Length: 320
Image 1 (spheres, rainbow, N blue to C red):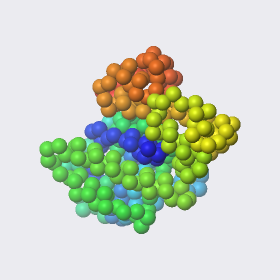
Image 2 (image 1 turned 90 degrees about the vertical axis):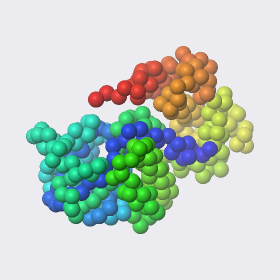
Image 3 (image 1 turned 135 degrees about the horizontal axis):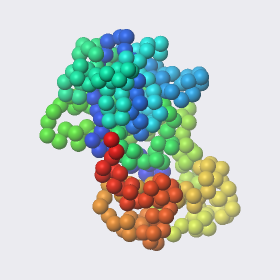
Image 4 (image 1 turned 135 degrees about the vertical axis):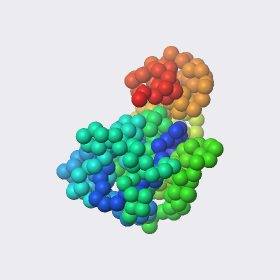
């Protein structure tokens, strides 16, 4: 498995927030739900996305047109509007609570039907919004690989998944939430795969290193079998170079030493297993290359700030 395939294997929407928004100008929505990741697919008209971070940086405000898809990485706040100068009329809080800027509840009056929301059912602007509400649904490694805001233009990829999501989002049938969760995962993976492949994309070091004749094979070995008791010497031997040459080239291209990268990979996979399975901590430790549950727990807490057990409990009973 290559590094990109492994990374994109992580997204697992669970009870994601999805809706179709229809709006007539002037409109402006302030997003401060602190969700880890949100996709905005523009179906009709245009919108401007204005992140709070680095407002002085040229290009931080981005126009999204028909067919474009934006991916916004949380938990920072941002605004989506018909024009950058339009003042926010709506604020989205954690838990998708919707109010005016002064706190008056708006959820009822902006509800336009099944997963449809806005100020006008016949509004000129139509967009599909999918939000990963639980932090555990998107791995930290994936979030760390993304900018605060990326936009994939409609003419640069096959947007058929957006069309399919648009058809499914308004349905109210048995199992529909699961269908929408999986469609959101597929859409995210398709967008990111295309975005990472662009020549001008600011892809992470491990992605650029994938094509290197020395570091690329080492990365694939680590991802194929992260539980193996790898050493730099063994990786170098299999790659056909000296230990020093691999260590130097790996750190230069990827941005961290091989064993540090392996530790991050193992802990990311442990987090996935804790989220997706009922495996015991001992079993998870064995599967990702730790000799004991205690060793995994210590490393996991250093990385995530909580114990594996607490991490799993938080996913089962999210705050708010």
